[in-house]
Amino acid sequence: MIRGLEHLFYEDRLRELGLFSLDKRRLWGDLIAAFQYLKGAYKKAGEALFTRTWSDRMRDNGFKLKEGRVRLDIRKKFFTVMVVRHWNRLPREVVAAPSLEVFKARLDGALGILV
Image (cartoon, rainbow, N blue to C red; front, side, top):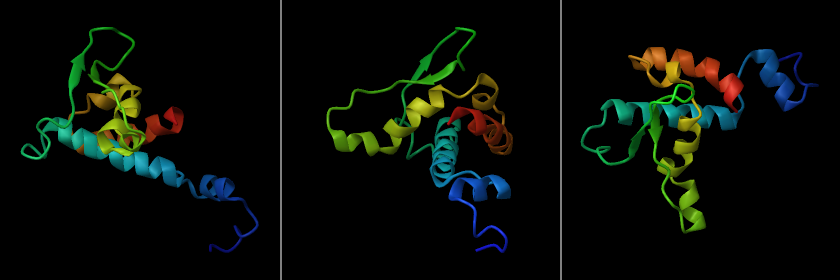
């Protein structure tokens, strides 16, 4: 425990330290992994992991992922199902990042608003 923060609630401690909650950090890691799969970092393992749907609408990010139908409740916890909803809500400038470092920097800004 950091001295001087013992009396604060969890959310207040995170805000004071400038950190995301555990849920946001998990989502951050999942979105980074999805970005790497989509950009081809794992060609053999992730060729058919996600299905892309192209959109030319101005308001969305243009790199939407297709959300599959889930029949079993347990499948809602699969990586490919959890990430799609959050990925589709990201702004265009985050999704169209040229490199992983740029994606991480833009994702930090977007996560503050997103979740």
